[in-house]
Image (cartoon, rainbow, N blue to C red):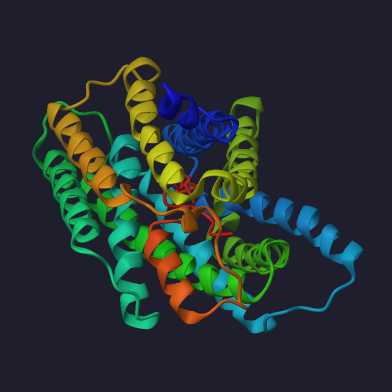
Length: 345
């Protein structure tokens, strides 16, 4: 009983509630993107633009109030903004071609991608248990693609294979973004990171919109039905970006990864009850494989995971934290999504 009471602490309960809120935010970004795609609105960069504006205004105002100089070179944030914008673009674009369930599951590709990048560039070492979990996750991803190609009773999109490839490419860019964020947040500041990402992400988005989506925006017949999903997506993304660091500070990445896993369940619920679509049975097998893989991967974390190191700590401690947090991104999500759209802070 003592161990049970020790487990159900205030922080644990807060983490459970906040984790499910983040999971619903990831799912809501997928829902709004899919809804816009069904209405024939194809403007993925424009969907993310407002989120960057919100980040720049809110966290930029905090930076101006603090009146502190930048701790990292400004051109690092330009590159990060470019990668983040294109990651969001590819994942949101995928909703034009494949189902919301496939996007939510395939977004998990960011986990092995982050592990590879941290192993190559940050010299992180991973235990056999974590590698086993990733292998099981990849097996689930293969089932999703196989189901999209061969299922004949789905109503998930016009070109599922193209959509699946877009999600995988976007998840890979999310991984690059996350590794960069991991480096910057340890050597700079979380508020600075979000403010600069919002600023340069907004600039890159504006340029891309003027080139690729200007005519699309002009052709949209703006109404409440068209504007609400746009605004809803941006608000959900902003809340996701802002709340993930809180969960990481209270409960660490284990709670975050397991909480975001339920976004796939919410996606299936939305697809069945909101879209009245028939879900192929292989999705459930794939979800089970991904769930088992993430449990294996996330299990047995140490307490250090709840307290990410700063730049002043030694390299040995940083390597331990990298091993504990390789799958954190959406987030975003935004994955949103993602689920992979997760911030490290």
